[in-house]
Image 1 (cartoon, helix red, strand yellow):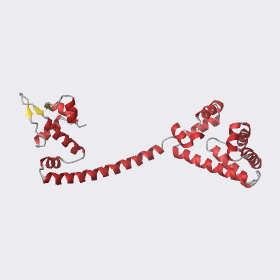
Image 2: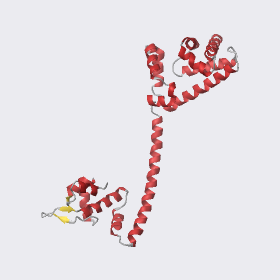
Image 3: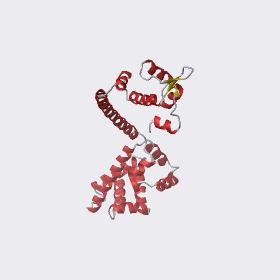
Image 4: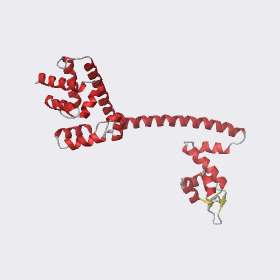
Length: 264
């Protein structure tokens, strides 16, 4: 709806003063005086005291001026457009339309550039809970996070984990997810192939597992063995690894224990 239509609905179609026009159109009184001085917009009426009054026709003209000014047109260009008649009007409008389209394309490119910069800046920001939910899906459970904090919140390793993850970006968490999926895929393949738990291949997988933990808090071989025991004692961890391949929880436990013994 145009400003003129809104004025009509509110009963303000009678001539308006400079102050009323300035407030309605978001321009300054000084700007309106300048438009009058350069012949771009003369108020059609005056009060008995000589003050400017703008009629509905004046306001329609001002609406056009405001639009073109916001598009960056010079006052001289706007004056030519408003003064054109007949075929000249059509030619002038076509030229202005082409120019507007060109500027709109430039603005669209600018918006794309801003969006790319915004996306880049946002990627550098720490991941939010919503980011993690979107990235890990069912693999992210706030209840598990709360339980972990309750069980280990007063430990040094928990403090380490919080410190190391507090500034991690969505891109860094995506890297964690990709590494985890790659590890678990290779882990399942090793179990299916009947890979010995005391061989080099098993030791390599055990070290990859330890590195994935060490990313969040210091994990030596002794502590890794404690984690491996939990994979058998906690049904949730057992179920997770058994979903990869039946027997995986036990195989990973044994591979970690064997690797730790050899490392010691």
